[in-house]
Structures are given as structure tokens and as C-alpha cells.
Image 1: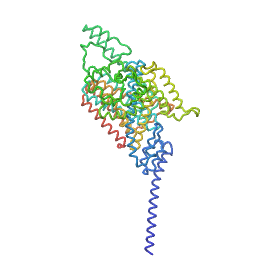
Image 2 (image 1 turned 90 degrees about the horizontal axis):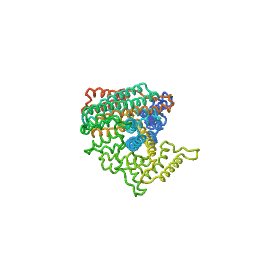
Image 3 (image 1 turned 90 degrees about the vertical axis):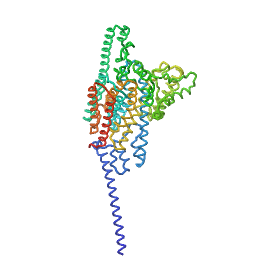
Length: 640
């Protein structure tokens, strides 16, 4: 009996112990849940302190989905896929590493799509518009060309600043400053490693002064914690002032060089015709191009030919960075051809080489040729590693060719393809409706909006088909360039939106600040084109122009990338609610690194008498590596 009582007592004690432990575990889980709910619904002040990546404090993974659904910071109203909800609500927690891997592959594909749409479809539209509006070379270089080459950064910034998630602004700040730091150190350093050369003094000092002032202004805005409408408009006005300084400075400098040239020619009593040519200018003339001189006294050295050129003279990038690296690389006349392209006042391209004779061809052949997403010539000439990128471009090229009409400046037909352009007019309006999330909109609760746009597109395509032929473009062909411009903007913007949302998701999954995601992955992805274009141009014999582009381009991206989206967002909010930005150790390291690196270059280059060597280039690259390490450590709160 004693044994039986002892066994029963032991069983009762074990049952009570297990019950107590179970209740304790439930209390712990409830404590986490109650803390989370208190933070997320207690009030506005509490909501501001809760970030989506705080889910890491919930040890019970079954609460993650509820946390995501009830936390404002996890909201993703922009874009077409709610990546956070898919990761935490649509799949099991154990599959999170697999989801993150899939997201990484998708992110790479999106970066390729951003570069493809921006440089392959948006930039050609800008190029044609600049020629169609008869803009002078300098105005085009400071506006159209700069906007085209910086479009990935600009659209990414617009997508981030206009995002409904307030912390997405950190992605834009990190991306813009990260790209500025990378281009002014890594890309500029790589340009310096190609050869020793002398920097163009006047453009360098001018751009550095504006750049340092802009970096300091951004630091002040981050320190005060907000960007008002007045501040954002101020950035745009500062760039307008910069444009005026560039144009006036180049004009004065050109006139001075022309006078010096005339004086020299008259003293030497040489050909009078060359003097007359040197004094003749019009509004289409390049303001800093050297005056025509006698070939007997012309210095054919590429460094001298490049001595007075700057980033305004860089041609717009109308081909993908994946297919542009092989051009002129093994050609002995590459530098001469590049010089011809750069110094020409007209836009140039090799469109004639790609034009196919459609005479006697069927409509099906023309349509299939126009929709072909893989260029055989680019495939043959590309290196093996870039062939992978070309393959990744195939789906984007197909979708863009089907929806975006492209009108090129050169070529006999200017890329005219009758059946393809008619298909563009049918698909482009429908794409606009669904890309702007208007697919569910109905007119009078009866007629869907997409059907109306489809009807308009079909009518326009029918008119074009019966008023044109297969061999010659119609007189109104130029209108398609503006249509393509609008469609390319929509494509670029929606891809940039998906990239920003994905980077936010990675920040949540890996518990990393949005600023760190912006200054690393987004900045690296958007700067690939600058690395390829500037280094290739330097190898072709134009290191001074490439060096100038490393500072003029990021300056444009900072001023417009902050000014334009912040102005749009402030106006959308009525101008009374400024954009709130955070300032922590990370932002201090971010701004401080950019500011100090610019000051270092601004001081050291003149001390070196504007002479750059490969050794100095390696120092700039090392500065970037140190800065990234400190920024990432600050982003993971190593410094507190």
C-alpha cells in the first residue's frame, strides 16, 4: 500500500510539474505577444518605435505572421508583390532560407531589368527627344544625357521616397550616398589606375565645390531629421544654378581660347581660313570643343585631345552595360573612333549595321525580327561572363520590345517596324492601365478602364497601319518616341519599386537597416553601368573625361535624386508634413565618409599638381573599402 501511495504521489508531482512548465511556456509566449501587441496598437508614439525587423524578438515563429499583419512598418502598398507577407505568412518558417534564396535570384533579375529598360529603351527615347527639340549640346548634356545615364539611381530614389513605408526613405538616402561614394572613390580610382594623366583643373574645382556643398547640406538635413518642401525645391534650384555656372564658364573659357588661338594664328601669319572657322560659333556648337586648327600643328595625342573635356561631353548610354564592354576593346582604331563619337556635335550610333532590309519580307518575318530579344552580333562579341547577363536580359527585352516603341536618331528607317509598332500601340495602353493598378477600375460600374484603353490602342494601330508602309516610316513617326518615353518611365519605375521592396524585405529577414541595404546592394547594382562606361572610356584614351564623369554624374544624381522625389512627396502631402529621416551613428558614418573623402580628393589632387597616378587610384579604392566596413558595422549597431 505504501508503494502504491508513493507511486500515485510521484505521478501527481510529475503531472503538476509538467502543467506548471507548460503554463510558464504559454505565459512566456503570451508575454512576447502582449509586448508586441502593446507596441503595435498602443498608440502612434509606440508605433513609430516598432520596425518590421523587430519580429526577431518573437521566439515563437507562429506569431510572426500576426506581427507582420498588425505592424504598420511591414506594410507594402507599392509594388505588385508583398514580399514580407509571402515570406512570413504564405510559407512555413522553416522555408525562410529557401524563400530568401529565391528572392536573391529575383533581385539579380530585377537589377538586370532595371539596367535594360533604362539604358536600352529609356535612354534612346531621351536621345531622340534631345535631337528632336534641337537642344544645344551643353543643355542636352546637363539635362537629357545626365538624366538618362543616372536614371536607375533617380527612379530608385523616387520609388523609395514615395513609398508608403516611412523607413523606405532610408533606402534612398543610403543608395544615393552609397553610389556617390562608390563612383567618386572606386570608379574614379579605377579610372586613375588605367594610366597617369592630368586632371582638367577648372571643371574639377567647380564640381568639387558644388559636390562638397551638397554633401554638407544633406548632412544638415539628416541631422535635423526632416526634409521640407523648401529644402527639396532648394536642391533643384541648386542644380539649376550649377547648370548656369557650367554654361557660362564654358562659354567664357571657349571665347578666351578662341582669342588666344586667333592671336597665335595672326602672329604666325598662317592660314586665314582657320582663323575664320575658329571665330564662327552658333547655339549648336559645343562650348568647350577646341577650335578647328591646321592639321600640321594639331597634337594627335589622346591625352591632349581629352584635356578640356568633361562629364557634360559624355554620350548617353543607349546600350546595356553587358554588351558595351566589348566595343572597341580590341580595335586599334578604338580611340580614334571614340574621339569621333565624343567630339561630334550630332548623336551617333551604329544603327545602320543592325538595320535589316525588309524589302519583300512578310509581315510575320518583320514582327518576329522586331520581337527578337537576343541580338546575334552582341552575343558573338560578348565575353563568356557577359553572355550570362545577355541571357538574363532576354525576358526583359521581349517584354519591352512588345510594349515600348523605340525611335532612333540615326539609320534610314530610324528603327521603323510597321507590324511591331502597331503591336506597340495596342499593348502599350493596356500595360499602362495594369502597371498603374487600374485593372479593376470601371467607368460607371459597367465599362472596364482597360477595355477603353484597348479600344484606343486598336484605333491608333489601325490608323497607323493604313497610313504607312513597310519600308518608310510615316511623317508622324517621331510621336512614337514620346510614347516610348512614357512607357519606358513606367517600366523603369515599377522595376525600381520591386527592387526597393525586396531590399526592405532582406533588411527584415536579416535584421539589417534599410540604409545599409541601400548603400550596398542598391548602390552597387545601380553603379555597374558607371564602372563599365567610365573605365572603358578611360581605356579608349579619355581618362580626363571619365574622371570628370565620376564627380559630375553623382552630383546630378544627388541633387535631382533628393530634390525631385522629395518635392513630389511633399506636394502629395500638401507641403505641411515634411519627410522624416532618421539620424544615428550609421547616418553619421555615411555622410561623414562621403564628406571626408571628397575633402581628401579636393585637397590632395591640387597638392599633386592635378597629376593622377595608379597609386593614387588604389588609395581611393582603399578608402571605399574602409568606409563600407565602418558603415556596415554601424548598421548592425556595433558602435552602439
